[in-house]
Image (cartoon, rainbow, N blue to C red):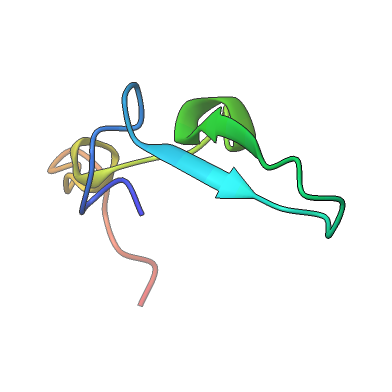
Length: 49
């Protein structure tokens, strides 16, 4: 989801049926998430194929 929003400000609202929704930031729910900056190719590594 980090490709589509800012995890520091994107809020996710969940409701459990009691009428009291709860809200969290994406980074709170997925603290170890990764984004496009984590998918760079490392030119120093060779392929094992």
